[in-house]
Amino acid sequence: MTDAHVRQATLDDTATISALFRAPITVWQRLDARGRVEDVPYDDLAIYERWLHGGPWMSLETAAMQLGQLLSGAGLALVADVGGHTAGYLEAYHGVEPPPFGDHLHLAHLVVHPDFAHSGVEQALLAGLLEQAGAMKARQVTVSRVGEVPGEATFYARYHLQTLCRIRRMSLSARTGQIFYRATEHHNVDPAQIQGWHMPVGRLTSARQEWEHLWPRTWEVIPEVRQQRTHRLHLAAAGQEAFVCCRQQLYDPRSADVSCWSPKPLTNQLVSAIRDWGHREGYRTLQWVIADDTVKVLGQEAEPGGYTVETCALTPVETT
Image 1: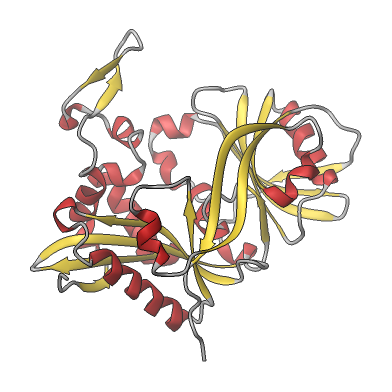
Image 2: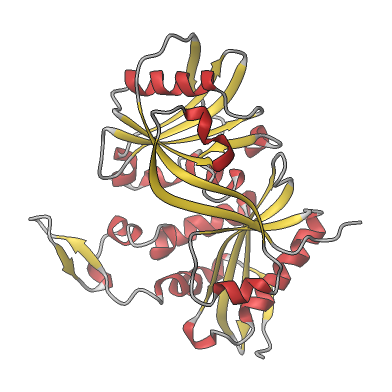
């Protein structure tokens, strides 16, 4: 077992963390003028072209912005040092949601350099996360799983994974509806607004992580991201309020991904209001990521998209 020292990340770690995320990518690509995929050196890619390979950690410039956001309170960033080298990185988000999630830390990223794979760095980082969860009095640590990743099941089995919910992607047409609702732009990015709220739609990771990714306009400094329409709304329908984010899909401008935070579970009235609003904005199709036990609220018109994610809890953290 490798002797790994786990600590809070600092801005000085930006380059090494970015390198950890980029290490598994062996071929860098982009579309040429004719729309064909071409292999190119990493240094020839623009920031947005790098972004398309995996988000903000793909470039030093956007990685510094992401880490700065985390260090300012958006989330938790831990690194593991081995012999003076950054061997691994862990990112997590603290949130408070209704059951089954409760007060929790959500594990967003756990990345280890290939040279230190299976050396105990993963365990050291998870131990550091569990320690942080205890200090925050978070009652559990959660993680999202997309299918079975080789080696992952054996690793997480040590932490007694328990499935909390299973979500799937559903497609539903936008259309006018006979419902009265009010939709206004909402610019307040404070995550305290959603503390204790449900996230019935769009919860691929955790309500807090999705909020930090979608609500602040951090990444709109990239022109291509800014051109992708993103609507941030305060919506009220039939006595239920909600924050709704509709984001235009990258390769289908007539389709949008829906995310929703609300103090109450999803209702038919709220679904009808979002569909009506989407139709008025010119969208043809709305994409919903939604829990299995809530799919029925979308109605019989909803079509499955063939994408599922499980949110699981690691060993509960004892609190005093």
